[in-house]
Image (cartoon, helix red, strand yellow):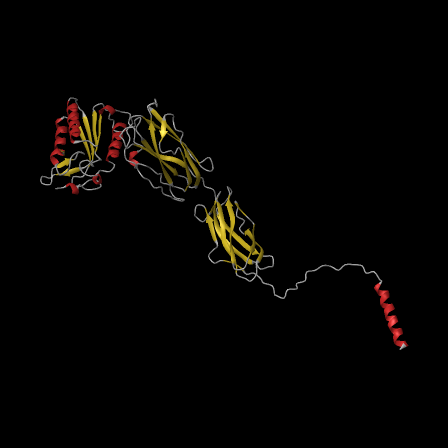
Length: 462
């Protein structure tokens, strides 16, 4: 019994000695995963068909000074979230003149979700004609990214546009001359005749005092004009009684994004000048890297008329353009552009053929009475002048008598079913022959087979 007590005492003393010793120091910290579940990795992939290149003009080229984008959709079909996802972009061909984001942060992509990714790419003034090869790598914090994939895109060097007002036309629905207090319209055709794309095109027009822009479009913005593309701008004006000048200056100011590839255009109109009452509609054509066809509101023969300063005081001209037959027939069988054709021929007669202005007898939409009066008047006038010459131009409907086949000129107030009031072509020739003119030249733009230039008079036949 005594032996057992002694042993317990020794053990107690030994424990007491060690318990009183001071312990110093600190263990290093570490992360201990105490979850019972295994890790849940993401699975990132590019959605099939989502990789695309988008540019502003749709030509699938990185043009100089153009902003574009490489786009794709990244989806996560794994069990866990993709963390700190990032797109790293490199250009393998070292193409000159392009800028892009080398690193694009995507962030977290949760399971069964996707994100649309856009990588901006821009060409600058130093862009060259080449092929840019982009390599894109998707990285993820835990190493569950995507191996590099590539996209190759052509690049194009800078080509400047040339924006101009290439043509214009003045029209009026209230008459054939430009007058105060009567609205008149001006059609202006703006075209890019250069090989480069024009953007942010602006057409501004200062309005003269006491001239009013009824169309309220003194400032016109055109987003872009491709090479060869044109835009038709229509203005409506009216001058009040306080406008004292005989001239109406229209100073069109053009600009584009570069500030140096557009040309201004000054147009001077005059009071009482002849104008058309027919508007034209023009659709511009786009011709990339091809010969640019200059747009026009008129045909080629209507402009650049040769000028001959020599005048023949013994040369006379009767010019008739009958277009509007709606009062006697119907509007569907009007003779399209007859007035314009007659007006252009008048310019040729004065500028090129040497007819003095006072010797031109110009008629549009002429009735039977007016046509007969002018033909007889001019025939008598030239009969009193030695070696006089005559030019006769007629654009309008012609019609043959069904039984005799005698051709007639049809005034605008005559129905083709009643040819007694029409004018026999043979009578016109007879009057001219009896005038004793040295030379007579006749231009007939009319059909004598029962039809008009564009549409027949068959509906008017008996």
